[in-house]
Image (tube, one colour):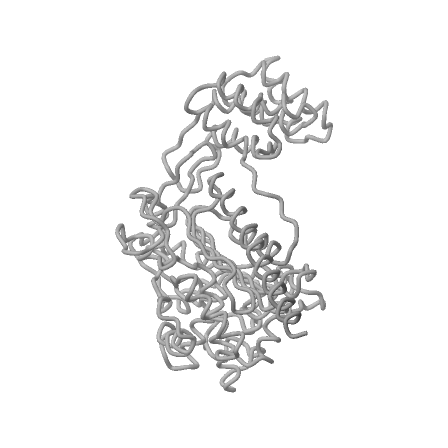
Length: 507
């Protein structure tokens, strides 16, 4: 009888091990496909009931020098820093030093919005405009000025702006809310924001690899040891990213706006896991406080705010795997995510220093961890097509597109991506304020190809006509606008442009 029990126990243990290996392999297959498709460069940690299921690093911390990402590389966690700020506010609440229903004016005298309460800031429902709305005028007059938290309250008082909406009426995610919360932390605690976080969060959680590293320094120091530099693919047709700090506009923006409280920390995957564990074992906050934080804050009309924000945390609407809470971080050339399944005690921590899809990928990993089906990553035909068109010409680009279209297992074709690629070639979008580039020949080829691929799309024809017009091909543009309007008689802008062209043609 004892031998039978031993055998049964042995086989059950083997089954558990096999199951764990299976999930690990599924997750590894997922990331291997992402990396192969140039869709991931970073670190990932997957934990199930305090056991590491998966931990790996991919890609480069510096794509120029080819320095690899490693588990101990410091990653900018961007807005994940906000959960440190929220935790600080909730700790002060537990100590009875503030109430989240208190108006901000109680702690920051002169703050010109008496209707805004701390809870509005925590849940991004304050209605405040972005902080640059208060300072852009002064920045224009004094380009060398560097704005810090000390400048914030005087600047807001001196240049009061109208609210976007009444507090609690709607919701919109904005850094300004957490900048103000950081000021409240300093006012109530009597300590600097950095020292408060260091003593009451990082030290308590045993986080020795997490530190405040202000954004101006992140983007303005060319050499930093053991640091994952943010990288950007400037165009859809690029096959290599550039360092974000190589772009003058990016450097200048973060040099000018040196505000803190919302995106200032760098960390490692293992150190963020320590923070995660400190939440689970209530080292940082009481369980009742956490439960309150993980409930979406209601709007004035009684409905959940649109982003399902609680007190510093966002809550997933889909609860089929359990209650999922998370916070993402993103900046120019990076994304990060901490996703916690508090029902099943599972956590996914993910950093990526070249893409903006950390939350999407973390969610898929959580699905794999819970035996949910996830489609394997596919490569974008539009991006491959664009790269070949730019580097080798139209004939080879068309030939490659026709070949890849047949491989629907590994490649996908998107009308919207092809459309975006066309506008990218046109040079319509220049978010980084770089010298303008206009490749009208490639844009026309891309839009024309898109109409062949999606012949029933009025928008594809409308974009094609716009490119022809930009290139001075007015007669051909008229024909294509007419085709677009034939497919969509409600294309008002197309009708307006066509009318103008026909009038000029008559004259």
